[in-house]
Length: 429
Image (cartoon, rainbow, N blue to C red; front, side):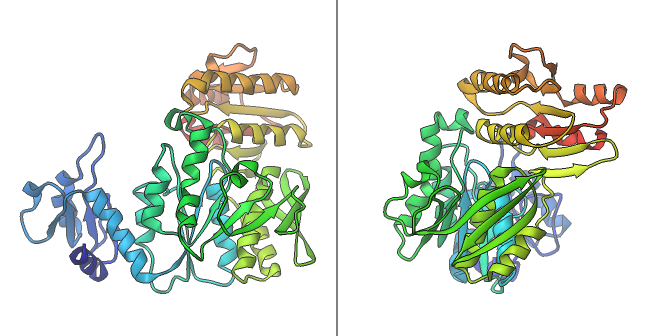
């Protein structure tokens, strides 16, 4: 690995895609269920890569190929070696909901004082996390690394690569049950971040003090707390919602001072993401005024809690991900929002396993119980529910309907898992 790292220092750009080969970069020939990266190594070199890392020796025909036992493992080890060599302070973020938004808010706040590297998009898995670490340079003062999980042990794998100095679990909820098996499995897996930090002196955990599930697994950790409801003396930052009309307007207080912030994020549930960013900013010496500026300036652009006004409608687009916890929060927020002619377009919640039928039925029951009538349900799971709401097998059917019968004058919540592809709808609304 030392040899590979010395090569990386001379060629500090990596790629895992033979279609994207910057001049002088290193190509890592990863494997998937339907492809073998080794077979594309030669093409990567022809397109500009200086080296190709492969794990099948027959492809290594000259000294531009580096043969390793396993490319993914080598990729991850290289990232860890680079992280250790630079010694950058790293904040690790995971959680069922809100981790991407929190990551971006934290980075936005910290950028008021530091040079910050943070996870781009949703690169939070066993490939994306090493890619993030390998973008680190000596000029970066803090890194904010998002870590996702869909199976037990996923977070442990990632924290062993990242070796974070600080951590935050945004929350734990009902998601990826097909992989985790149960809610308890979700808690244990997210808690693997705490397990790592517990073993390392000097680490800090930023924690939602209102969340009993997180408190239950936080023994032995040095905590920096934020909350809306918890009035304990050791809470650093407190917050309260002023209103959501439709974007969150909230107040936060710390050190005897109160601050008023108007955001561009839809949903009262986003107050915890905001408080997390404020707490982390204060901990790292960002001034309260700079925290306010950062939180007010952040505008989402990733289909998460976005509010958009088109020529025909007002849209709340939260179509990147959906699980029972985030769906319940979105529906509750929409139900109390002051708006005329409300409409909902909801897509299936993926990866719920045996709990899928029950969880989709609960959503339908909530909609009926709160008097919603203009509801479009999209996907096979919602299609199994017994209800009078309009149902569509997929997003293509919705688009076909909109092409013939456009919707106008509505305030529309668009919420579903990424696989439902509801993010294709705003351009037609």
